[in-house]
Length: 274
Ligand SMILES: [Zn+2]
Image (cartoon, rainbow, N blue to C red; front, side, top):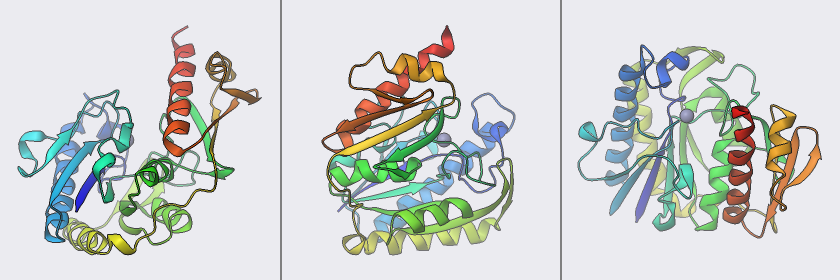
């Protein structure tokens, strides 16, 4: 059994604002170490649950945050940008996906650093008419390869969204968000126990946890923060304008739809340079 661990940073215990998560900011080095420690707990748990191999995908910002030299020496690390499957690169060979340090979707009330894929460009994102965030988008990509998202950790608002959208997926609440930039983190000893025990149980149960079910072709609808983003994204003929700030793409499966959506987002983002 092969496990892929995707690690974001906003949902790491203790993280409360961008000064903790952005390269070069005052607290970044402290929290990238804590991010690496949470990753190591998930790795240890996955092996304890019987994983034959574990691959870690650094999934935050520029995707060069996890400290390789402090990472469990048994695993491979995927880092850097322009991965074909972005936060899900490595899922191709996985039987189970574990998401550490994740966060709620853009616009969620009182959720740590809420955003969806791209904070500056995306206001809302829907999958076949349902509002989604990164966890649900990534679960859809994982479903294409037959892998369930078995475990997700982050704040309480994320956990509520995961319970609603991904039945069977285990969650760990490592902190309670009071605002997008204010948290009440659980005691570190408790956080570590929740991650260690939770990931092990979830990976052991992976065969019974449902793969996200998607009916028919996959349509992603994205509301940008500016109409110019939508205008530029629509240079691609397969991108349809829904309204001033909103576009839609449809693919025969989640991966093709993701490629269209991410391409439209990257293209639309270029309007910020002009
Ligand atoms: Zn992130």
